[in-house]
Length: 253
Image 1 (cartoon, rainbow, N blue to C red):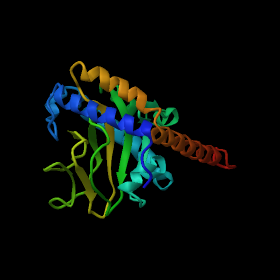
Image 2: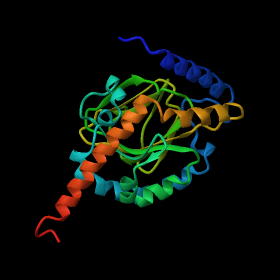
Image 3: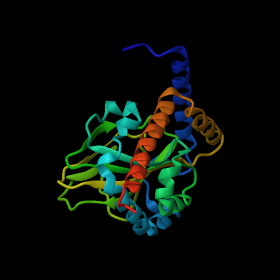
Image 4: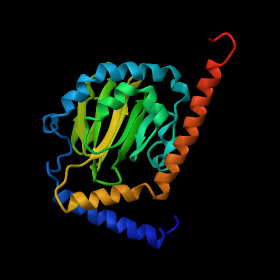
């Protein structure tokens, strides 16, 4: 493998230092999985689940046209290279997908309850999908999953492991965890699993809060995030152009 450039090594060093600060100055501690009661707004997200599910059902009518995660973010190829993990982004690294938001207005309204929102997408695991053990690139955010479509299952055949805790999704229920811990997820059923996948800024005390804010705003200029945003824009153009072409076909109006 090519040796990282001096700039990349410098940035990686800053991130490692910031992670130590984030761990030390975390307002709510550093558990792998959080009690939902820690975040009072979690109840509001669960109340919105039926409206979010209705919007998801419309999106899934075109499921075959949705991108895999690695189609958008190529670095995901290190953990997923098949067609089993599909996505529909409303917000990625703080950048909105205006057309996707317009397709999911109730979802977007509900998301405004979450402070420090950075990423919102539907995460679709096809039958048999297994995401191997990995950790997130940076501990300055926490992750929320809202169960949308959770197939019937036996035992742990449909689950996510965070560090040493195995958790199970429930439709309409929130799961909040720290993806900086090693985690893996799997769907060993014969049906599709979907969650609303959200990242939000980890609650921190000063000075970690300021350093985290600065890094989150700098991250958008890194090559892999810029590439991901460009890839999503290209997919979005094709997706909505196809929808427009279909609407304009003779006999469809």
